[in-house]
Image (cartoon, rainbow, N blue to C red; front, side, top):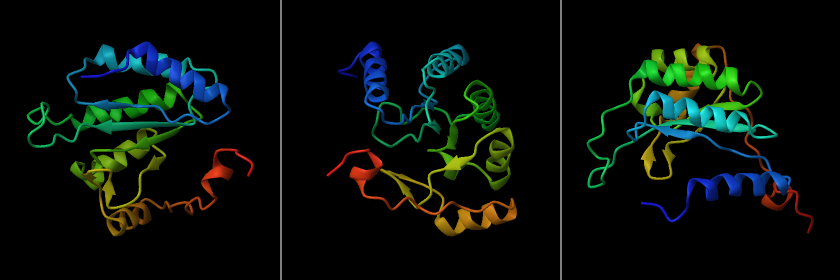
Length: 164
């Protein structure tokens, strides 16, 4: 159920870009979409001018009592493929391995990094869903020879380019 059309959503992204703000735009796998739907989404996103700075690839986190509660878990290799194609289609973006990461083994997350993911959302919770713990992420990143970037601490007005 939505109150916004697909065109409304695309117009919003264009408006954000026209306002000079960076765009974070990706998708959720596991909603019942086809492979063609996933590729079409990437085609549309990759044709934005400029391309998004950030492209999160999320896996549905089915919640009990919701209409999608019984949707099957997204296959790990489908996630890896989506990240690889995203990296090719949008080469300068932060390709974010996002929601659903807590269901992936360390090895599966590593495959995602090797396929082109270069960002995660760090912290124990993503809105309402569990995320791997900070400590678990630190251990995995250290195993891979990676280290997290320092958090951005600028005031929101500065990040948005607003002068006070």
